[in-house]
Amino acid sequence: MRKWVAGCVVVVVVLVLGAGVVVLLKSKLGGPSDYSGSGGSPVTVQVHPGDSARAIGTTLADAGVVASVDAFVAAAVANPDSVQVQPGYYRLATRISGADALTALLDPTSRVQDTVTVPEGLRVDQVVDRLVAGTDVSAASFDKVLTHPQTLGLPPYAEGDAEGFLFPATYTFAPDANAEQILRTMVQRFQQAAAEIHLVPRSRHVGLDPRQAVVVASIVQAEVSVSDFPKAARVIYNRLNQGIALQMDSTVNYALKSSDLTLTNDQIGVDSPYNTYKYTGLPPGPINSPGQAALEAALSPAVGDWLYFIAVAPDSTQTRFTASYSEFLRWKDEYYALVP
Image 1: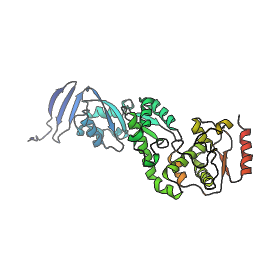
Image 2: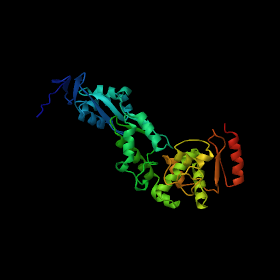
Image 3: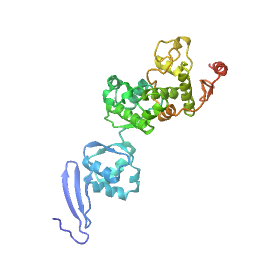
Image 4: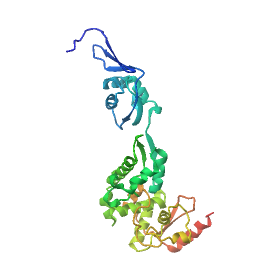
């Protein structure tokens, strides 16, 4: 049993551990165990979103970075900058003091995570390009997983295809994350978004199954700017209801793996189930990864009788909508007059 000594008696116990020294400072209040010295071999630790100082201290103590949780908590309490520690992965030395650990966590150069931003509207092959550029994982590794995606947690309505279900967002990956872990994280983020907007039950309200709703969202994502998503979704539904071919350039571009603003007659004639000039109805699957706004528009289209839309100019984000074919043809002539 410990014997408490009145007054300001400090007991110092020095334990030599490789390059580090544990200094047990015991005041009358019982000071925390702490390391001193230059530290030992490096380790990677993760700070999770919402972690308290004690939670971070526990992570550090378990990894051998600090001698005790209380050593880090004491350093955090003493330093008001401790609230600026960001979630992520950090490369830290083992056997360092709580104060030195906090200093390292506040140093951006200690962070070792891979941050990748995947924008809305990318095809799977384009998503892979982004992931390869932002991580140390090869394209071949991603392609191998995507060829057999059973471990990714895709929803049943994905029908075993990741196209459309790698959710666009900014991701932070562990430096040692592999292709499967990265892709699974993106699918999980899709599942989260789908649950938040009640994709499955609401898709029935617009007469579609969940996969078809994602298809509509992907077309909307590719065709117009965010503000026009609900109108474009309504055009798709109006044309489907009237048995009119969708005639969307974006679906032909998907078949051709291109991004041309204007298509030639040869391109429009491509024989593909994604060619919505040639085949009526929706294409068999999504043509990109739509964001949450596009998914929401597919489930809540605007009210209107529009059957046609076209951009004001090749470099414009403004789109005109009409129910009149003659008006559409006039706008089309104006559009092509501006094509270089």
